[in-house]
Image (cartoon, rainbow over all chains, first blue to last red; front, side):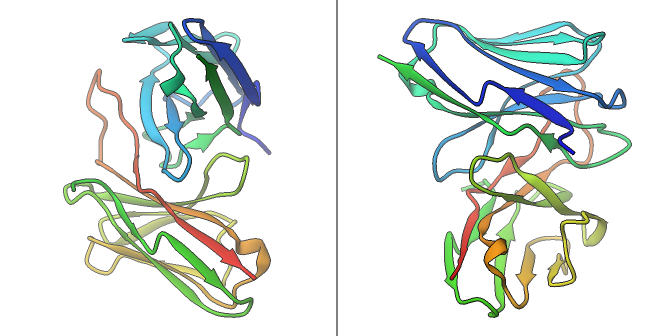
Amino acid sequence: QQQVKQSPQSLIVQKGGISIINCAYENTAFDYFPWYQQFPGKGPALLIAIRPDVSEKKEGRFTISFNKSAKQFSLHIMDSQPGDSATYFCAASNLFAGNQFYFGTGTSLTVIP
Amino acid sequence: DTGVSQNPRHKITKRGQNVTFRCDPISEHNRLYWYRQTLGQGPEFLTYFQNEAQLEKSRLLSDRFSAERPKGSFSTLEIQRTEQGDSAMYLCASSTLRPGRGANYGYTFGSGTRLTVV
């Protein structure tokens, strides 16, 4: 059973455009939602994370939007660049009751110059 | 290099053979995790250690899999009698014990060991 559902599976965006990746979860005990970026041949790298007590978190060109009632969260990449081309994973965890992150299935982002 | 180090990067083995992978975490990190990632999927949790104690194991971790972290530093993951279904990227990650308020908290992953069972 997939704890975190992620969409779309792949995404193609023009340089300068906005990339949007969506995730949904069911377990209301989750209290931490990170996003990871993975390049080919590398392990995932933490990009940005949010707790459910805020609805939005912005760091540079990356923004997480969080909707607690809908149990959904999304990653927005503003002014997308070719260097952003990678696979993005959302994840969820109950940090203090458990110790594993549940990952989505990933979104392959391609930014066209 | 202060990141998580995994060795070997690639391993090709024949079905039925045993393999062992090593992970060296970030030195100040108490927690160490093993995940498995297959093509087109997100990482799946296998097991984790807090210092030298193995505190949780996934049902994915069959009896053929064993992990150790003998002195609370590096860790090894051994797969006995490998099967073709074991072919995957095995990722090690480490983290601190507690997240800081306001800071992004998460694992630091290594680059993984890609296992191919032929």
